[in-house]
Length: 231
Image 1: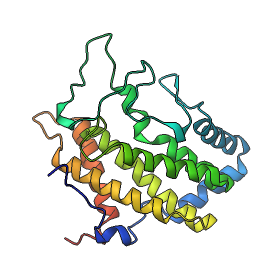
Image 2 (image 1 turned 180 degrees about the vertical axis):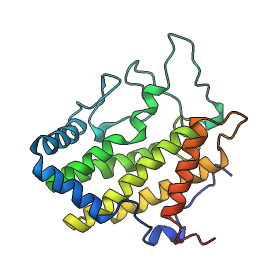
Image 3 (image 1 turned 180 degrees about the horizontal axis):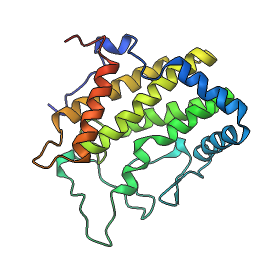
Image 4 (image 1 turned 30 degrees about the horizontal axis):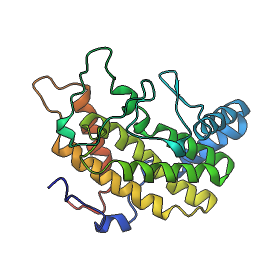
């Protein structure tokens, strides 16, 4: 069932989901940036770092966002093989690779920085880099068949994808950008991630931050698509 899983034809992908970030919140942020030159410059610097291979994770410079290899640990150079998610062992003994170095970039935070760069500047290079990166991640990580299909990681990435989704919606409104293909892909990824988290929710006798992340992910994705999936 994992190999055949597909939601590309779900009707909700063509609807307009609820935006969790209100228009006035984005406007307030842009107004704050227009009044605070240092803040605006810092946000644009972060976006440029993502474009030019200067963005750091754990003090390691990642390559340009458009060139990311999603299975690669940029600290050791090790590439995690693509295989069924339950076949991985993440608890390696030193000096083996630490999975956090491959997980952290795949949470897609650099895409958020690029979208902020686009909202502040209107320069299409930021939007193009974000869209290409999300497409690259999707192509390189088939459902349940890579190291990135982990319940906690999916929960965190889904929350970032929700922010990306809402910022893309605002990019359309503010700059009249053509974001439709990127939005549809993000919506498909959100549904995949929420489905995976639901099927692998980390409910135990000692529920901690992992289960909390699962719940937040499911609540927010559920709220976003509530108009498409009626109770």
